[in-house]
Length: 181
Image (cartoon, rainbow, N blue to C red; front, side):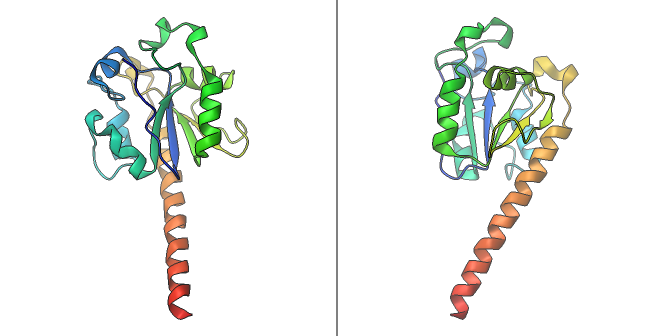
């Protein structure tokens, strides 16, 4: 089973993993394995208004968040088991060109490396893709728990909150100008 891209217009962030794990592929939902920190981190950082479950992944595009993977559709499993030939960075580049999200956040160092062709540390990388904020996040997988650091996730949450605040202020100013004319 493969997972479809969950995307929409005007995305604040497109989250990009390597490929769905076996549990996610079997359940048909992203980050579905118990112990995965993806959903708790979205809530903890304010990216979602509450803790969502994997079964609610379809709600993310309405919140300005999208989901995809850098591996070809139809590929699933643990990162170590996925052959390099299964990664499709050109497909991801086409998706980014069509969607034009404000940011892409890779949910593992491996996903970033397979998409960008080079290793990057966790954090923000403004020079990685022209015109796009790029975040590399520590993997939320329970299997990577010993290497997990929440700080890059929180930095992304603050960046998105500021972006949303500015967007809302712009809407308010346009609405107020319309009332005074």
